[in-house]
Image 1: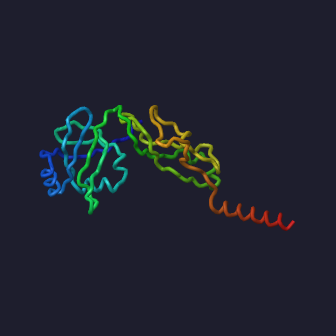
Image 2: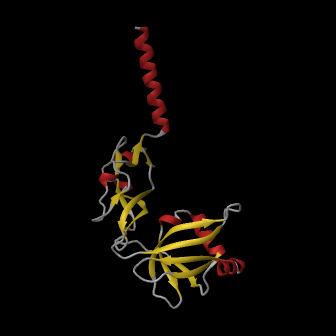
Image 3: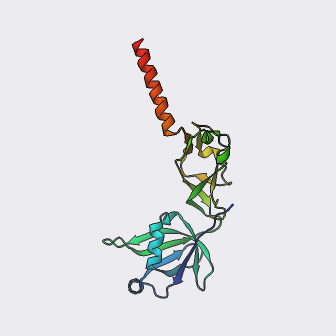
Length: 209
């Protein structure tokens, strides 16, 4: 199932060159360019506060956007570069690349847990630890999974869920080339402490004998 692609609204920019870019910044906007896709580059401008908010939200360079520019067809894009002021570290220019549905890109996909009520380990007081609440995948732009599903049914304390246990859409693969851990089911800290104390006591008794 393809995930919802967030809209990113920009305006067409009439002027180009350094002078026009400076004027755009004086107007409280950040100049940018949209390129690729077999068509001419499109100069755009984005309200400074809107862009800054997106940057602060994180994952800006690995988020697929539906770019909306008045007078233009909507197009899927991914940011390829954000230029910043050398002193203030604020965005001064942004580059977006158009994507075809067959384009391959890296995106972070969230992980969702199901069947918690069917996990014996949780019923015994076990604790679920999400090692990776999201996973970076190489995906096709036209077939992006909305989320990855971790099924806890039948899992006990001590069990570990790795990426190989998750069904991925055809053509999708992790960017990490090994069977890494997504989550694990561990004993509650009180039980761990009690077990450790018992083991220490047994060790002392064995030493005394």
